[in-house]
Length: 235
Length: 235
DNA sequence: ATTACTACTAAACGAGTAC
DNA sequence: TGTACTCGTTTAGTAGTAA
Image (cartoon, chains in turn orange, purple, red, cyan):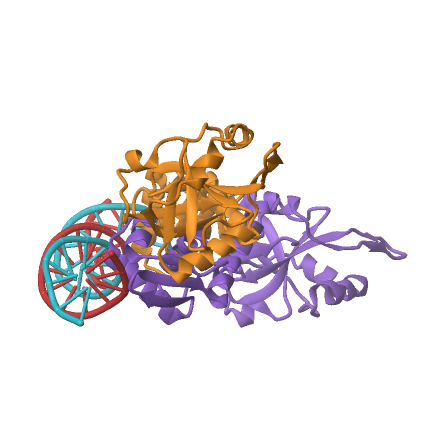
């Protein structure tokens, strides 16, 4: 879910580095004349390696190259500029973000008293889940006991970041408090959301999860199984 | 003069890549818990390689790491964040610039009719050179005949970018036109400036250079010698 | 589970050189 | 001068495994 440029093969980053160096010479804006030897100096590597890189970049379609007796004319292509642009955009997002895009928690599945399930089925809540999460939650929650102190700490940090807010309400009998929730991916596979009721039912080492599907079945979970939860904050 | 992060050793860029991946997991903002196996997946490499990288990053002081039985806790250090920040800043500068930071020209030294020298010594010009370039120019110009069509094209492109403007003036005898100049580095060593008089004396395959020192001596230049001129536009 | 060592394999590098 | 090939050397990457 972290949106990074596709790494695909191992040379991707080295090529990006070459592209960056070429951009330093202005090749993203104009056709520059350079030599493999000069480029090699700038990258402190050998002439042969620089030459190989240019060949690879040309094959990849990241640069346009014309070889002349005095050197080669190079211009970074649209595709190449897009690569640098993507890197720039990702870095910008990372460096300028005020809080993490996601927090990862680990814990083990257990069977709770099922109180969460009761809430999920309350219509006033359910309608908001459908509207704000985009799916009708399975009528039950998955209870996860956090593994370590680190996870509990991370859980508290997560709660400090912006969340999807589910409004509370009241009927003739009682008051239903507001709920914060964060979209999650469980075990890198299943979609869901972590629920934080404003008034805590369990202790802070426990989290409750809802999902469009019955997670125990979808992920073949049983009590005691470990799960990895990646929770996303609001952008 | 292109201000890039110091490459120093060949692994610098690879380490920067690992740092970037860790930042994607939020390690630049909070201490994350991960495993070498998980990081390896994200970088699509092996667990062993990921482990080696983390060791190297820790040695470099780019990350703080605590190994626990369930994985390792990682936080990017101030130094590490500075690395990412530098990369980000450089990319931003490159990608958001409207024109190149520098243009490189090549040509051969020749002896001109010395008209340029005459101008340099004119006091109204000279004072402006001292003020705007920061040095008193040697009373003479170095004439360079551009090598190829590419260089002539590049020279015209350069002229379109913002320059240091030297005001023209007039005395009782005649009018002295305005001059544009660009700071340059000749042969990666000597400081100077390229002059473009508004009214062209030579054809467009010739440029005139002034410098604080006598360049023919400083760089041991003789007629017919090749020079590489890196000209800088205004920021 | 982890991390990370050792020993091996694969890939990248660069010296020499042809063009 | 240039670029870029071959090929021996070096380095990075990984499998197996100990702790």
